[in-house]
Length: 568
Image (tube, rainbow, N blue to C red; front, top):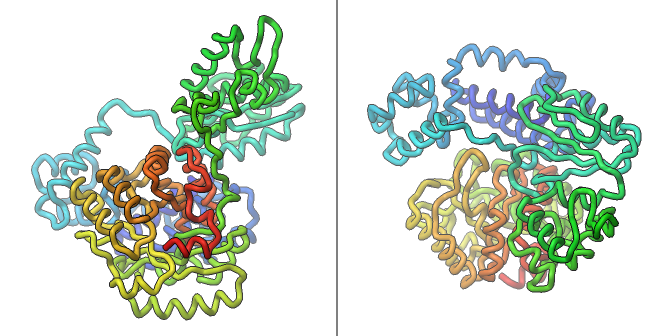
C-alpha cells in the first residue's frame, strides 16, 4: 500500500473509534499516526520493521498495524469496526462540516445511516431539531449533496500526494537501460496545489527499455496506451501517469512543452512565429535547423527572454516581465528561510517534546523557531492559559541551554467570535511572537468574518494571522471575508499574513500571495509543525509562495532573528 492509502485507513479507524465513543487520546493517536505516515518522505512499504518502529510518536501497537498495511494486508481492528457501521454511514464523512461526532449525533437522533437518509431529513427540516445544526448547515449540506448528483468533476490529487508517487516512479524508472535524464513535468512541476494527472519526461538512448520499466511499476492497475516513446497508465487508486521519452538534444524544449501551462506555451509559440521560428517539443527551429532545445534556458534566451521558473509559467505576465517589460522576480527558495514562526509541541496538540522540536528545527538548518502552542479556547488540544504559558517558559529556557537554536516564546491565540483574543494583552505582551488564528465559526458571513480578522490584526500584540482563509484543500472551502479590507488593515498595522505550509492547507493561495505583495503586506512562511519532520514541509510553503511571485524580501522569516524582533 502507498503511504496515502495507509494514512486513509488509519484516519478511517480514528473516525470509527470516535463514533463509538472511544477515549480522546486513543483517537488522537490514530490521527497523529495517519499524519506521520502521510508526511513520511519515503514509501513505508520499502522500510524494515525496525524503521517503522522508529517512526516519531508511533507506539508498538500502531507500528504493527502500519507494517501490516504497508505489506498490503488488512488490519483486524479495521475489519471489525467496518462490520459495526452501515457502509452508507461512513460515506457521510465525505461531506463538509460532518465530523465523526456530528455523524454519530445524526445517527443517534434521526437514524441517519446514508446519504439518502440525510437528504430526506434535510427535505423534512429535521436537522434543525438538533442543537448545532441550523439553516447554514442545511444549506451547506444540501449544496454538497446536489453536487454529488451532478456530472462528476475530474478527480484531483493533492500536490504532496502526487509528488510522492511521482518520485517513487522516477526512482523505479531510473534503473532502466539508457536513461540519461528524468524529470517531473506538467502541473505538478509548476507547483499547482492539486493535479489531475502526472506527467513524466525521460531522455534516453533506449526508449523501449524505459517504457518497459515504466509499465512494470507495481502499482499500475491498467494500461491506457503504450508506444515506442509514450505510455499512459492508471495506478491503483485512479491516478493517471503519462511518460514520454525523447532524445537529449530535445530535452529543454520538451521540458518547456510538457511543463506548460498551455497558455504559457501558446504565448511562447506566438513569439517564435513572430521571429520566423518554429517552437515545438523537439526544439526551436529556423527552417530545418535546430537553434536551441537541449536546455530550457537556451530556448528562452533564443526567444529573447530571460529564463522563467516553472512556477510562474501560467501566462500571468511572466513572459512580458522576462522580455524586460516588467519585473521578473528573484523567487524565494527554501534556503532563504532562517526560521519558522509557527510550531507546536506536546504541551498542546503536537506529537513531540519542546526539545525534540528544537532539535528537529536545528537539524534542518534553521537558526530559530517560534513555539506557538494553542491557547486555552482549544480545549481538545489542551490549550494554554496564562499560568501554563508561564510554566512553558521555564521549559523553553531549559531546552534552549541544551540545543543550539534560538527558541522564541510564542502562542497561536484563538480569534474569538467577536474578534477579541483568547488571552489577555498582559499575557501576550510577554511573548516574542503571536500568531492569531480563527478556529471556530468558520462559516461566519463575510461581514462578520472580516470584522473578526481586522479586529485581531489591530491588536498591537499580534504579529501574524495564521492560515488566514481556513480552507482545507478538497475538504473545506475558504472562509468568506473581504480580503482587500484585511490586506489594508494588515499593511496599516504591520501585521504579517501566514503562508501555512501544511499540505492540506497551503493557505494563503498563490494569488493571495501576489495580492499581499502588491498591497505591501509582509508574509511569513510557516510549517505549523506538530512533529520534527513537519519542518520539512516548509518547502511546500516556499513553492506556494514562488507561484505567487514572492521574493525573499517579502517574507519576514528570511530575516536574522534580532532584526525580525526589532520590527515588532
